Image (cartoon, rainbow, N blue to C red):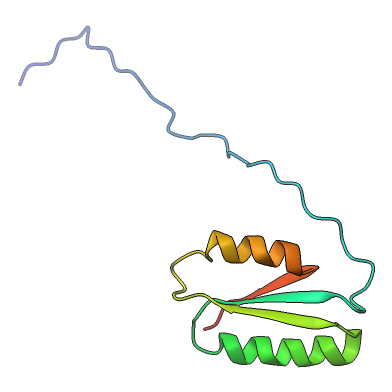
Length: 100
């Protein structure tokens, strides 16, 4: 194979800058007393048990008023948008458990 002495090569930089999506967090609650908690169970092993313990502690220690519980059908699927919408209207904050 013969190469021409005049061959040119184009070097390409494969790096990129990170793309950071915009996000506006909800305002923090000043306390949890009489608040409504939403729980989302991701259907993995031990997620329900973890949420049960968290619920007991939060109710006892912080005076949470009520609990709205939802179990996803599968850890690999997102929660149904209708469930999220309902929790948005019915809950003051939410916790998502990721089992092991």
